[in-house]
Every structure is written in C-alpha cells, then in structure tokens.
Image (cartoon, rainbow, N blue to C red; front, side, top):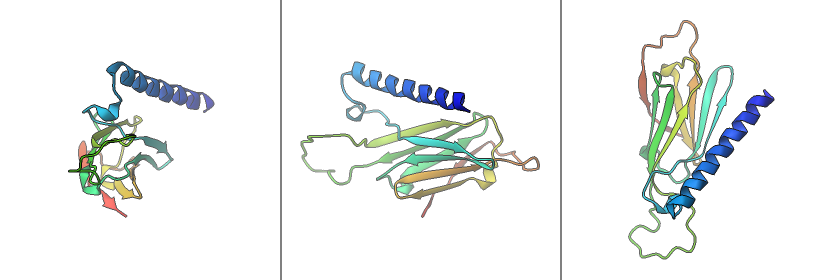
Length: 153
C-alpha cells in the first residue's frame, strides 16, 4: 500500500511540474491563454463504489456535463465557468488567479465494471461528486456510454 501512495505522489508531482513547464515555455500563464482549464479532482475507491470529487466553485450546475464511457474506462466532466461579475466592464486586473471559460476533466477508472443504472452525481457548495457503484456479478452492463444528470443539493 505504501508503494502505491508513493507512486501516486510522484505521478501527481510529475503532472504538476509538466503543467508549470508548459506555462513557462508558452510565455503566459494558462489563465491568460484561450484554452480549456482543468479543475482539481480527487478519486477515491471503497469496496462498493468509486468516487470522483471535482472542485467547481462558481460553475452553474446546468453548465456541467458528465459523461461515462465504459468502453474506454473514462469519466469526462466538461462545462464552463463564466465571470458574471466583471462581464461588460472595463477592468484592469492586478491579480488574476481564477480560471474562467471552458473546462474539461478526464478521469481514468480502474479496470472494473460500473453499474451505470446506479450512477449518481451531486453538486453542492462548489463541489461535484460523482458516485460510480461497482457492478455485482448479476448486474447487467449492456449500456456502454451514458451522460448523467446532475442533482443540485
């Protein structure tokens, strides 16, 4: 178990270093370029389900789309965060750290069957929580791809 945690730490460190290197070589930070930003996400597993928690403060629930593709083993979370506060105003920013515009977050799932009929997505206090129950031996897994409706609580 300790080796897995160390491997995950190094993978996350490498991902962050690559992102920082990309920003440095492009000449401007990702927030100033017109490309999709990536929200922070946690992935956890219990004996009954896999959970994906994504930080999406300020994003309207209707602007979020969650797609699960069992064939590729990926969950894709897409949407847009708009800046309604400064929209239409002439503003000179002195500090700009919050990303706006389109975002995308791809999560690769471990190799296991998910019960697509029982998937739940909730959005509360700026966090999106995707619950992916593991399929039992007798569960039907005929459905390959599904877009999930978000429930705001």
